[in-house]
Image 1 (tube, rainbow, N blue to C red):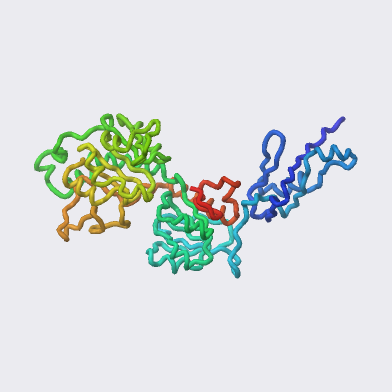
Image 2 (tube, rainbow, N blue to C red; image 1 turned 90 degrees about the vertical axis):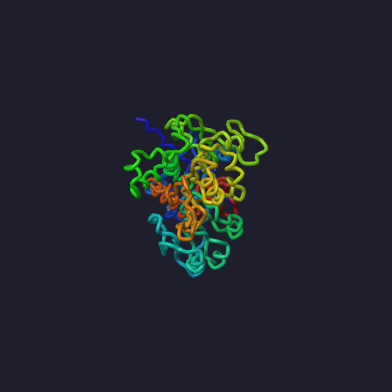
Length: 438
């Protein structure tokens, strides 16, 4: 009976400068080339598999002619303690005198931290004021933040800092250039809250168009409904529009904007427009100009990042361009809509209403800004306004996603695996190896 020869896998030998060795204990996978597909050797089976297929020097037999041996793929030998690493995948060294990383969490109040699978110590602060940041991060190699800024001045007090992980989608407060210059890696949780925020957008739309909060207040704080028999007078210009009559203009057509458009169509919005950037010299296919979006829309949906060119994107001029029955709904960041201008627009009836999950000053309260006036100081309330306390992201799924992405970012930095090739990094990486990636 003839025995079929066992197939021998050969690993092509890369140039010597690209061969890096690393302990197997921190390795996730080993990849081996083969003629038609890729073989992935998982860590639990690594020793047996490597010793069987690669550790034994299965070189071309010396009985073969020299020319034939040269034409065949060269092989390398792996033992159970080393593996080939990309030149971009080098774990950062620990600070001198330290045998493990130290993690400082600045805002543990938002979500529990995931378990990290590397030696470390961790300090969790439930809340941190901006003036407390420098003192709290001074011994950290890894800082986990959310909303409170970690500034260049704060980093000056943290000589061991190597990774700043933001447990959020928006990172407008991060000085990316400074972090790159310091070789501080920055990670975030991209698209981690898309479902939650898009659903909240619809909630704010219905609350604003149906004036649900105002109706609730009239019912629970007065006898008007009993005395008048109706509260339809809350709409002095007539009945509100339904979804079929609405024209939604989306400003910020990324992952979140696309999801909002999908949900809006699903509930029956009559038309969905995608706005071009403000002051753009050309309008891309499938979009309308910024000014046209303002003039045509009955609902303006803001879901774009806060950057230098989006601060005060909607101010007095833009509000006066809108339809009198328009709603402005902001699920992006505070400061994109000028709050003083919005308060005036609502008091003077330029637009029908507004709803926002974000404010320029957070946490907010009575007297903290133009949209939260203090009656004790003689300030008049802002009508037809609905505010939620930056909780659009808050769902079980978002928390689980944030924890997973945070863990991938932190452990990817510790293990040196965030950069996958010369021009590719893990999706969570914003700044890494001295370069701004997104």
